[in-house]
Length: 224
Image (cartoon, rainbow, N blue to C red):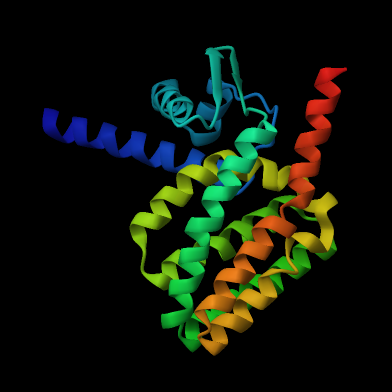
């Protein structure tokens, strides 16, 4: 019985941590948002202990700032840190797109096109949360199609920091947040690895301009 209790506790901790990771990656929090352990526990319908454990892990992941149990926040991102993460994403997501293009099936293409269709609807409806979630789903389909689970895990850690900022810029960014996904799909249809890699790099660089601009404006306001 003690072994079962321990296992149950570990599974709960893992589930809560995973759910909060997904929320960050999908942009359900935005920079500056304050997290309250008790409120999150009530939302999950559990005690505060697994929430606190997950929060501490996320602080270790540098996804949140934990100053005290009463001061837990989604951090801002400096321009330097954003550019570093962007450079890493270009290499890793470029590899994911390149490899995906070599093996993508018609079923894979259909999934990506369905995501794009739903994302168009989200943008038209002004649904920031749905749009950011679908954007994340599109990007993470590439390492999944490529069959690169280790790469997927590395990208999840990067997106813990990027998710809130992509969400923050999603509606102001407008078409820039989705237009560059279409060339990725077309490259996968042709099994053109080079074009797929270039297309996802364009998406990260050009589609990411609204994110960088908001980070720069935030830094300027702080400097005043």
